[in-house]
Image 1 (tube, rainbow, N blue to C red):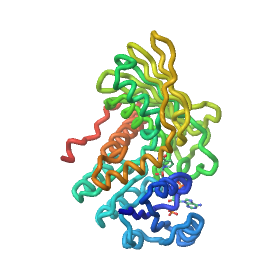
Image 2 (cartoon, rainbow, N blue to C red; image 1 turned 45 degrees about the vertical axis):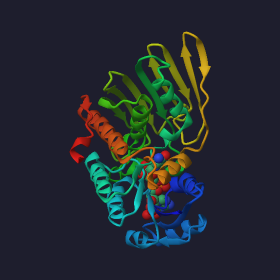
Image 3 (tube, rainbow, N blue to C red; image 1 turned 180 degrees about the vertical axis):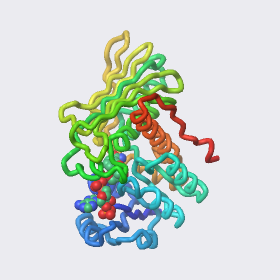
Image 4 (spheres, helix red, strand yellow; image 1 turned 30 degrees about the vertical axis):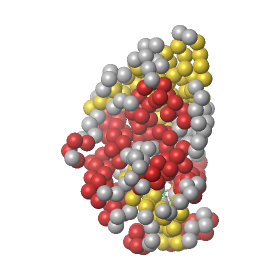
Length: 338
Ligand code: NDP
């Protein structure tokens, strides 16, 4: 059975990763693309060999498609996802799922009621490095996890220095862009949920309109693990990493907070140091593989709608903490959907 996709948004992420990820599935086809601008839709379709270009959501949802991939700016995700769900299309939505966790809950509840698959495109869960860390922790190789540190401050490439640093109403800012990923990756690797966050943000010279382009968070998890994360748009030379320190060992991963299947993971214990081996499969292709399987009724997307609610509730709490100067409890209110 082939899966015919409609792209909602003539975006950079679709062009750089997701179009290839869909076409890498034996049965994945891109049937149409929608842009709010007819000219951009036509140009994008031409450049990416997509047979149909449309400029309204109705036209896209009326096309012969099974699923949509939403990668517009963040304020549009809610309305577009709800419309797609209404027409019975499966939805893979970019993070953050919406601007508020309350809106994300509406999307997830609608998908559940309609019996369609909704996934959140948290690519980092699909990285071999993060899966190797999760497996090592679950197997007890570092003993009892105590603390984690996430280094995810990067330099926002010039071609992406648009809405993320100028448009609060579109969900700009580094917290909705990168902290959501860090909250999700911490949950995934630790197999634990964050319950509280304290956050400082800054405007270090790139973002305007009151938006933050740097953030440091301290997280407390259900098990008692504490974590710190650093997200930024303005550090050209920082490098990325992810560490988890336990009673019997430490996992130290370098260059793993990235879109590429790269980096290394070292396990250090009383026995010495060991480089963990892991697969280097493309992250987005794996995400799409899991999504196609979920459509067939085999398992779930690598990050579900509930995972998207969790990451957004975490980022939301971080923003509330930054503006109030206080630690904020994280509550995704998942119970209220059932
Ligand atoms: P882009 O800025 O490339 O695209 C977002 C929207 O901007 C498009 O839908 C398009 O609107 C509009 N746009 C694009 N190019 C132009 C242009 N030249 N002139 C005017 N408007 C333009 O954003 P990204 O691809 O970086 O991000 C899109 C979404 O994906 C966001 O939700 C983001 O958070 C997420 N993302 C996720 C990543 C991941 O790894 N999971 C990585 C990067 C982004 P229209 O469709 O109407 O043409």
